[in-house]
Image (cartoon, rainbow, N blue to C red; front, side, top):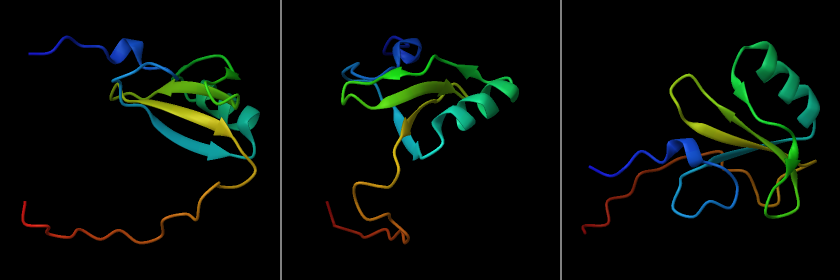
Length: 86
């Protein structure tokens, strides 16, 4: 069994899965996460020089919340599973 590295989830940590979401209201989301009693990190710049913070959910998954006015890519609005016969 691999060692549990979930406590090291943060921007720039190689080999660690970190989910990301963006919002134009970073400070508001930060305050809401704190008020909800979640494990919330400080707002800081990530490896791409974006204002962000890390929040850990009750299931232990870490999420990076990023300050961004809009998505850099077109948002995904449909999900499809395709069998590739591998």
